[in-house]
Structures are given as C-alpha cells and as structure tokens.
Amino acid sequence: MNRLQNSLAPALATAGMLHFVRPKPFDGIVPPQLPGSQRFYTCASGVAELTTAALLAAPRTRKVGGLSAAVLLTAVWPANMYMAWLWRRKPWYLQFITIARVPLQVPMIRAAWGIYKGRKG
Image 1 (cartoon, rainbow, N blue to C red):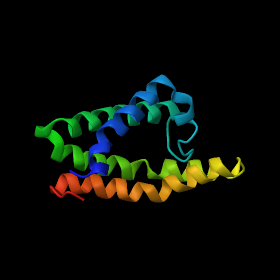
Image 2: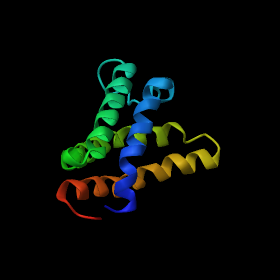
Image 3: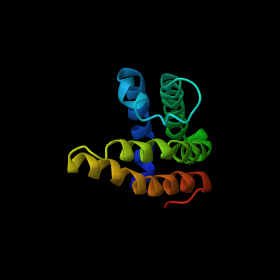
Image 4: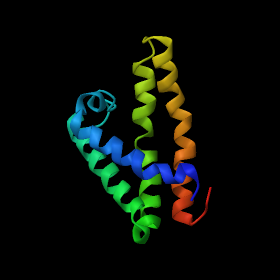
C-alpha cells in the first residue's frame, strides 16, 4: 500500500473519535436538506468512520475496508462542500482550507478504491 492508503485508517479513526468528543463542529456542516437531526448524522458518520478504520487496519478485512472507505468518503463529500460554502465569509486561510478539502477528497476516494481493488495507488 502507498502512503495515502496507509494513512486512511488512522485518519478515519481520528475523525471518528472527534465526532463524539467534539460533535458540534460536525453538526454544523450537516446539510440542512437531510431529514432528521444533525446530531444523528454526526454520530452515524462517526460510527461509520470508526468501523471503516477498524476494517482497514485488519489485514483480513482490509479489502472490504477499502470499499467501505470509498463509499464513506463519497457520502461525506457533500458535507465538505457545504462547509466550504458556509465558511465563504471567514478569513481567507480558513476559506482556503475548506475549499481545498473538496478536491482533496478525490485522491482519498481513489486510494480507498485502490485498497478494495488490491492496487498500490
């Protein structure tokens, strides 16, 4: 596995834990078009990230973890886009970070798909 593929499990584990330790920032980027409470989506995505990280970390489940990560990263992409829109009036460096996250999702999805397909990149 390449460096990006190796970083997916710890990144998802960290993000998943943060959904429970500091849920408010995640609540704030749940698109309002989704039915139900923001906290439900924060907790559900936190569980999904922790589960996916565990799947990626274990050699026996790494392939299904790759598929899970690709689906998860695609599913949360709209929240990243919504966050970039919400932060459009923040200082330029915060706008830059949130805008940069949107296209950076693509190599992460590709890395996860590569794990699923058994490729290095």
